[in-house]
Length: 451
Image (tube, rainbow, N blue to C red; front, side, top):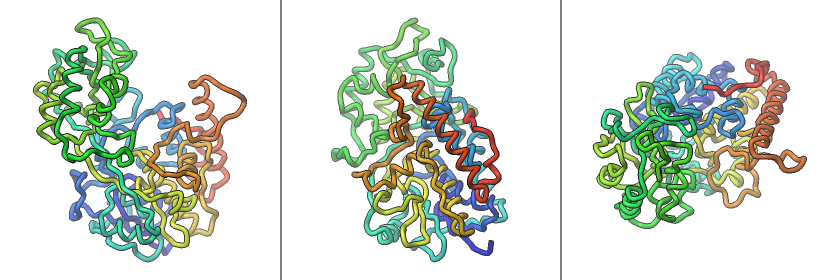
């Protein structure tokens, strides 16, 4: 093409964007500050490193998360393909071996002749066509440059990551394998059952435990889907028992009854040598994590492979800072990933696909790519760039923001299925209408997100 596109950030969005551009024969210079730069939540120098959970959520095509994977498959996402190749057992979810996933993404980027990978920090937004996918941990100097570019529309909130436990340190006399409603002795999750007394003792110690940040968090600083487990617990003694620790659909084989509460563990890697505590994002000190979480039955001798941490996330006020394609109006800069305020791993991947398609459209003189608002990601982009969205807070894909179906009330399951079918039909029609950008995938049948 003769034009070099700069992509800043080697996370999920940046890596997907670079590979999507390269697939179209467009040369890319991809910047990643690690290993030299300051990236407090990262542990490796690999591209597309997952810093929180290793789950990419549901694969059910009639769920919003599953529909998003279907849409990505229809658009030829490289990272979705890699995620499937690196999957680990997780019931109805797509979870990956995070190290294998990052290694495979890094290898594909490094060997691609259209991609030049530079390991250095970017402190100013360069000239030319730029995709800024610096992520929620955008470095301070680049964050300042972005803030100046968008007119001060930068916001910040805190996110949280759950601890990871070594499998060999679990007490399997207590912990049992079972997925909800799937019967005893089966399933991809490990379960730690608590009776009423153990649960109440655990809750009491959890809400009183010492946190890294001593002051009280204001609600506006905490993204609701990633609040620390201790903050959720503070809302009341039964909040966790009806949330992350709900025992519904599970039977303890030791008693033959449903426990009072259950802590679930999900495999971190294909070898199942490590497990993360589902829903246990935390801001407790490391010492308190050892003390309090070892009160959970089966975790009395837990060996912590990784402690839970809090980290700062940065995102722009997209409805007032970006256009309908996540570009900064009047510039050749567009954003991708969580810095747009679209929250979630697969959402970040989708934004990389969208950014690449729009850069290709600009370079070739085509109309901008605007995905149908009936889809999982199209509706999220529409929500995130709607001036009526105020105040703007991070959002996952969900069926609450898609256009209504019409025709009266429907049962939830039927409604979700109808949403998914409509979204796939509309996206397939759109891809067929844009062969100049999606010729390599537009002929694909309606996708499936089975992992």
